[in-house]
Amino acid sequence: MQVIYFDNNATTRVADEVYEEMQPYFRQLYGNPSSMHTFGGQVGIKIREARARVAGLLGCDPSEIIFTSCGTESDSTAIHGTLAAMPHKRKVITTRVEHPAVLSVCRDLESHGFTVVELGVDKLGRLDLDELEHQLNNDTALVTIMSANNETGVIFPIEQIAEMVTGRGIAFHTDAVQVVGKVPLHLSKSPINLLSLSGHKLHAPKGVGVLYVKKGTRIAPFLLGGHQEGGRRAGTENVPGIVGLGRACESAAQNMADENTRVKRLRDRLEKALLKGCPDSRINGDSESRLPNTTNISFEFVEGEAILLLLDRHGICASSGSACSSGSLEPSHVLRAMGVPFTAAHGSIRFSLSRYNTQEEVDFTIQKMPEIIYRLRELSPFVQNTVRV
Ligand code: PLP
Image (tube, rainbow, N blue to C red; front, side, top):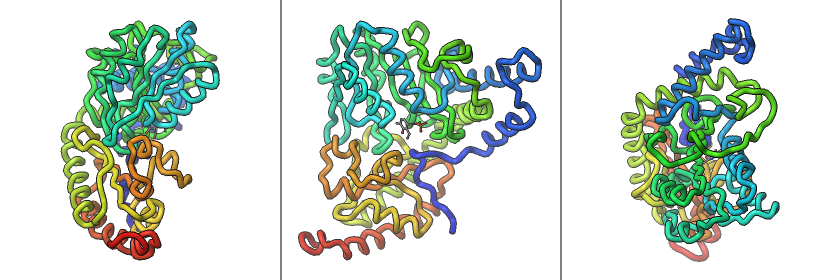
């Protein structure tokens, strides 16, 4: 059976050009970039090239790029590294809808005596910037707010937030894991101090990420050991991963505008047809400010997991809640923070597209989905007892 992959916010397929460029760095050019010999040195040159390519996509200086193992490590480094550099400050501000890579770190800080404020969102998943401003004070070391939500695709006004926060002399970090490669960035012109990204969300392999650290930002290293990454992140580099990420960033910089237009057109076609074909369904999140590839739709009175199982029988991959929390039947913390009613939160499905999706795949899904929803509602005791279909 052919796979129709609509789970690109969970992970993406490695692009052909990325895979090809990585190949020599497994078995031919396997030297250690820190070695003194020419064999290792040529690998070091390739890492420099990758760093420049990443910086090209982010619009910053290559010296501001630190390679890490993933988005999670970048987030942890940004938070712990900033707090370690400012031991006299004890307050951190974040949001209730962050990915666990930020939220669990912040919640753990509370048990170590930090004051952590989690800002709420409204029913469209938007932040109240007045509430943020009200929370900033002299004890605040760091504000960490994601650029776009992985479950709903809602984009936050990060530049405006960064201005507000850094204007008060407070460090600002953004988890941009879902945004890089989908939204243009010009970090040299931005007040953002720290930004996390992850290779496997933009057609590079798993196991490589980046933490951008703006020149002049105070941050202590998180992993101690060797002198890699200018002493800012110890550990022998994941060379093939870094080479792949560099190539993926170059492709994104070249093709982002065209790809986004095409992907958005497919996403809108899917969304519109599903809302029309499936009664009692609705979009979760602010449609005005959303990633071009993501739609999160609630189908009332059915379990998201049941929908996923039936989609899976047709080879269609989507997700209910976030991929990282699937396996648990708790409704997603993001939808709960938005006040989505229980019956709708349980029946929410995220479709996240990529450049590899086709109109045929979208149309096949449009054809199958109403059948699935009607079938599940017929079986649902809740529907039979309380509502008409
Ligand atoms: N932040 C966001 C917004 C994410 O969506 C994810 C992964 O889903 C992460 C962080 C974690 O990234 P990684 O899987 O590279 O650790």
